Image (cartoon, rainbow, N blue to C red; front, side, top):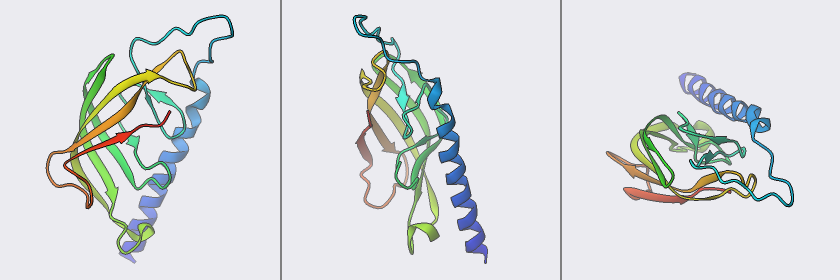
Length: 153
């Protein structure tokens, strides 16, 4: 009974996070018209699973397909033209015995965003294209202490 309640609470939380991210898609500025060059943003943004852009988000979903890995409690110490740095927690579902019944484990992590490039969906903005996670204590099974991932465009 207790595991069922915990699993239900986790699934509802993930659903709320996913639904909340879908409500801001219309806030993105439109692309430049033909004949007018794109004006690149000075400070890159972070693009999420729903193609929303953000600066210094508190949370960020890493596993867009199933929500089984996300960053939470991000505290940004730097957000600049070339990189951004934060500390937070990587919440990862251990998927034991299977993902719907798994347990989310917390792993302290340092986050670095870098490799800014023009965002294809909105050429007026640059976005970070790479995220580097450095686990400062324990880490999820199968992850290196330093894990580098490409971010979507």
